[in-house]
Amino acid sequence: GGWNSDATRYVRVTAEDDFPEDGIYDESKFVLHSITTNLAICHNLDNYFRLDHIQFHLDSTGAVRAHGIQMDAQTGGGDIWVHDIIMKATPEAGQWNVGMIFNDAQITPKVWNCILYGGDNASANSIAINSNNSTSVDIWNCSLSGFTKGISEVAGTVTVKNCSMGWRGGVGGLDFTDVTTIDNCVSTDAEGTNALAPVDDDWTKEYISFSTGNLTPVEGGNTLVAGLNDPSSGLFSADIE
Image (cartoon, rainbow, N blue to C red; front, side, top):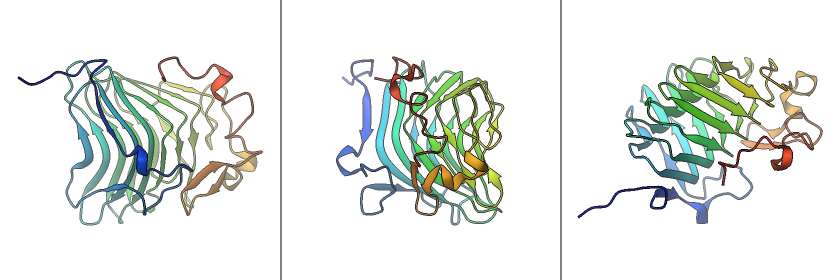
């Protein structure tokens, strides 16, 4: 008995029928909340896994760490997709939030079209996306704000394309930490190849509203540049299908 997953029989976890079409966090729709333990909301141990169109709320009240999505302990984890995720973080002082953590040398996940925001309590420690121990992680077309760190590479190779590393309260912009490849991204420090900084170093000219989680790019900002970061620009791999 039993069954095995493969490229044609994969596990998909989704709330596509109850997901905000405008990309703005909406508590009235389906949301997965953290609990007061150190566990991730979604902890996957399988290959051939799809996670999409789900909202997450990371609340570290009473918890040392509140993770959103954690992937590890795979056997040949080369077929893992995470896309169309909205994640809100509200950490307490001194606590941790990690939006996504990839934590096994065998996994090579692909992440795209995700919004992660909040986590900007100045006395809290938080990371939006952390490749802690993965062979490779590809991240495309994501918008981040808040958090202490944006995208961090501890081990393996992280490739980031077409992402926007937004504002962190009064502290400044988010940074890439030891990321191998950064291409066509917007960040305060204008890091990587074909890099851009926010217009006039003002992130309010890039997103509509940080406070409400409306990370819709503002027309005229550098996050949305016609012909540069659209799907026909050549930045998007055929793997994203």
